[in-house]
Length: 207
Ligand SMILES: Nc1ncnc2c1ncn2[C@@H]1O[C@H](COP(=O)(O)OP(=O)(O)OP(=O)(O)O)[C@@H](O)[C@H]1O
Image (tube, rainbow, N blue to C red; front, side):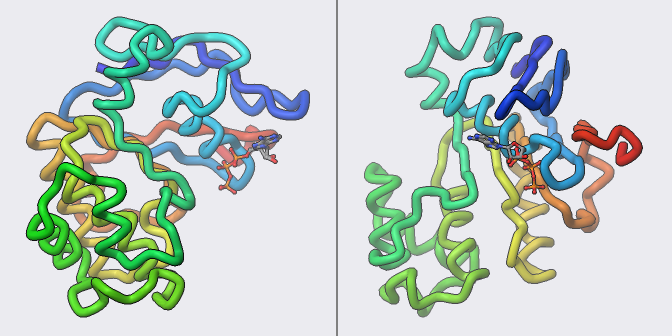
């Protein structure tokens, strides 16, 4: 269980959100929603332990994440905007670097799942924006982490790709995982499974 307790985030003397509370349990898919600049990425970075809140706490299975860094990083897959993908490497090389314990067959199966077969040995820099995103998303087929925190995973992904990803999110949740994501897109079928947490930003009317 992930618990967000009275979390307040301040950036450049601006309070993005204050006293935010929510929790996610096994099987949950949670969409962080809100207008541009509301603090969605900032929240996900706090959850990933990449920045510190002004106040409040984040607990994973009852213990503050700051007190269990090793377990937290083992249990978490965070895909930010750049997702650690290196443009000079090929999709195969990126996945081998990021998932060193996987086999080549598993990595190729992951690339097949995101429709990148045929592009395994092309440097990422030469792929389209959507294909580059798909290289990062292939990690969702390799990771053992129960909690996925995904910043705009659907950006640049075509309709059938979005559908496939939604299916994968639901399968992960059905297997006891959790997904926390941001997106400005309307989610396709399966969106009844998705719980929304709204960040209002500086314009409360936007909520
Ligand atoms: N490291 C930082 N230092 C200073 N200000 C920051 C920092 N990171 C984010 N901000 C500011 O915080 C605000 C929220 O940014 P954030 O990226 O979290 O919003 P968002 O809800 O994800 O927006 P979008 O929908 O456009 O992606 C913005 O005004 C941004 O300029």
